[in-house]
Image 1 (cartoon, rainbow, N blue to C red):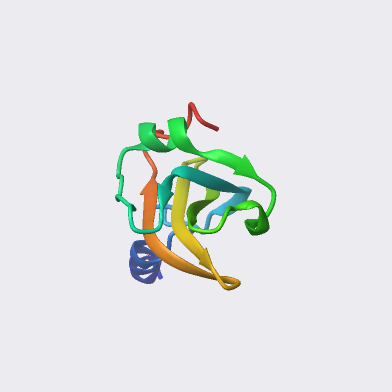
Image 2: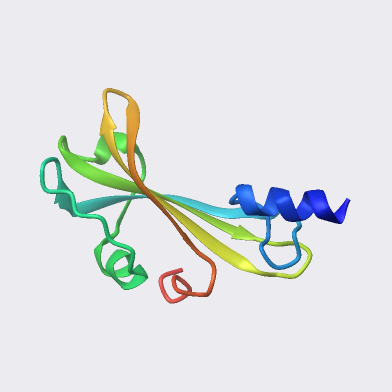
Length: 114
């Protein structure tokens, strides 16, 4: 059974990389990325960039045409307390999300932002 939990934790964002248990979503938030526009998108891997740039919004309709958005999921493991943050950068296009980048921070890089 432990073998399958190890494999599952590798392929699922919502499984703890430390104790291999399923994590809970403790927070979801949508953000706009005002400096990222169609034709000028640049991928960023640094948590500090997102902490400085993200602007909270309530719904995708608030994102101006041509501007990228970012969804945040904060996970917490009920077994060991480990916390992880997943950011999904996307362009809203006709009620769909064109995903550009998905980032996963699990070493406390986003703790100051939360």
